[in-house]
Amino acid sequence: MRIYMQRQPEGQKAARYFQLVLHEDLIEGWHLLVEHGMQGSAGRVRREHFDAWDEALDQLMKIRDLQIKRGYRVMYVQGEAPSKGE
Image (cartoon, rainbow, N blue to C red):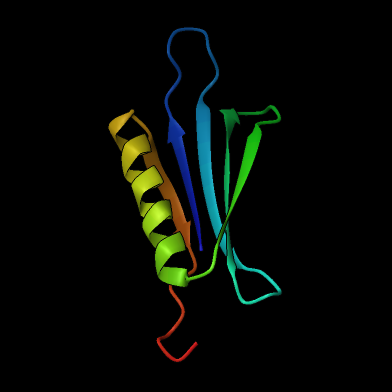
């Protein structure tokens, strides 16, 4: 699952981006990658590991909601939650 957000520039500054990527690792866990920075430049990356999908998704949604409150807009969402059988 991937969520990409942007915040419009203020004055002469470049637009800012915030990206959340949630993917399964090779040892039955989940990684949440959080990347943010100025559009067109290298950003900062943070990685968090979770044992369960529900925990990882909950954290992703909390971060998304916080960034929306800070003025970011969701530009697109890619992927979806795995089915209950996975």
